[in-house]
Length: 271
Ligand SMILES: [Zn+2]
Image (cartoon, rainbow, N blue to C red):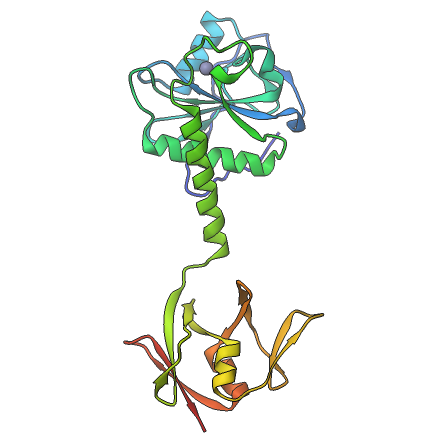
């Protein structure tokens, strides 16, 4: 199946068609909704490549193909190795419900690189969006029957808490575009509220500015619109406060606006 594997901030190489495969054996298939967890592994080798792991799994173990769905190299490159529907061999009885992600390295003596951890976070996040049933992220050792196995040999509690922080940061970025604060003055005196610059437009707090200019503010419940002196604005609501472009707001209030760029001040003047 062809799934979108374009992951912002990560390099993904699709090597599914080029890796060594068994001549006759094939992995069983599942539905994506059967996937419940991402299983983290280390390669238990100081270095390595998907080709080398696939060769070993096919030629030495006699398996249909490489064990993992993804291999994350030390430089952060993600190799896509198996269809997600393939029930490949990596966590025994749990294979049907698990998706295997292997970080190259022997973490009994080495540590995953920051690039590797960042790529793993991005990969898991991307997969969780596309496969909502994949709720858990577990270490190989955490699957039934594998408590004895020192894999992935990095602490999963820390990995999961770092991953939660990564998700939180991603969410914050979407909610709060980069904003440069701007000060506001009215007839020469500074207001106690500030606005912000967004994509070159200064956005001002509608209520505070309208009050200072003696304008009338209405909130239209049905359309969730803010009106000033009976006119609609292209406002943006942030944490319950409406912000509107300075020029638009000044026009409906019948006041003048001037942008003091060096000092980042929007200067308003009543007529
Ligand atoms: Zn493992």
